[in-house]
Image (cartoon, rainbow, N blue to C red; front, side):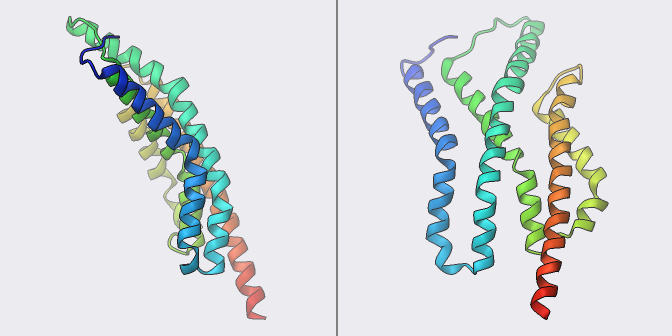
Length: 193
């Protein structure tokens, strides 16, 4: 890696600190946002937010872990091979490396939030379990498109490696949506009596 500008080392350190602080402090930030908006929320909405903070934090960390340990090294190898194939000399600025790495880490952390988003939409009655179940084929195709975009390579192996966790997360969200919908029906029947 090269230092191209005098500030590259400082900026790489700054990007690293900002990304790590965002990842580590996300549960506390979510808690503070909840404290700020909680006076305007109903009790059921407060319970929903409390129930998703821990799973959302865990899923974000799992996605970030996958992005940094499995996806980023493979992507660097693919891009390196592509540059060599073009006959270009391969040099990389340290600030470009760090910003590229953390963009992928945060992108994968956010993509792993799929089950939380699905259960939230089902809990609020926006999307039903039946709608999620009927459109699972589109979700599988979308996962492969996501894998294709974030892992450009000629082998397709990295695309499959990225798509499989997203597909598994979709079916986890499908299962959680079914349970949430069943719980909501039980609560509404109990409240009717």
